[in-house]
Length: 362
Ligand code: IPM
Ligand code: MN
Image (cartoon, rainbow, N blue to C red; front, side, top):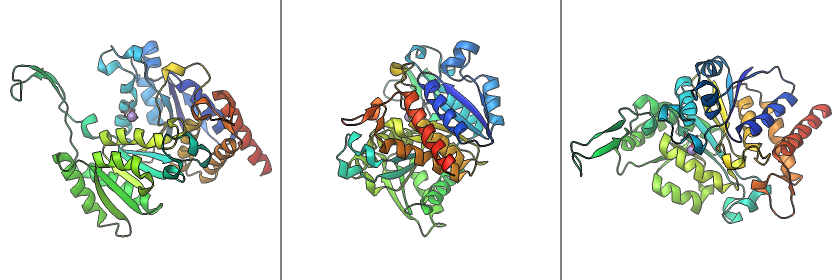
């Protein structure tokens, strides 16, 4: 099991360090090698995704990724900005299927901004297509307009596009995931306005014919954004494009109380995966030992489950996290009256201790 460890920027280094300690505590035959990525790599090598980092990632079975980005890089040319590292990894590794679960831990029901009864027991899975759509569609750029409302004016443009095979493969991923859950898929589109998403809807409907045991519903993205805060438990698996998935997964994450709790997995056709927390690099709290490492630790569990088929070890991490939460330990983002505040390191220590206990118990 070869893992490329790419901590990145901001809180990335702190949270990844804890996930690495958790992986080590499992005493599995894992090989880990680290490299710089994002702003850190730009500072050292002049590029957010240096050749050597990309090669390490491509040669590994899985990538454990922290986070990239800092406001101080906002003025750099786009190809040099930290965000290009994660976009480049997704593209070069072909990581088209992005899993973003939003699970509400019973202990954290009070940490959500929504009423407890709306989110208690919430368990939804957002499946975001990750290598197509307006994020990667060509052409894009700036030019002088020759038509539109202001011919002759400076303008910018991007291209939203999806090919049939791109939609088919993500639809299969969604239906197969739903089969292992509550057998319901909500496909989110904007078919009432966009040609790309009328096509999306048609292709998903076609693929659905192979999954008669799974219920399929279609929903416009604006309505989906509303339903997510109105009655989130009505969803099971949500499948959507790159752009809508970016937005809806941030929204869904806050239903659970803290984005600091949510892991994610991005897979290609060879089951190679990149595993990262759903949150960003949080430069405002970087280096302060305050960040919640649980999203990254749970991402390591997803790695064991999805790429390495180590169900037992993945369960062990997830059980350890639950027991630590049950014992009342909280980082500041999930802290509430009556619980005990711990640092990033303190939370990592507690998870490692919980895992070590289960190992010695046999
Ligand atoms: C995410 C992030 C990225 C995205 C950025 C950092 C490029 O917001 O993983 O959701 O937009 O995909
Ligand atoms: Mn995002």
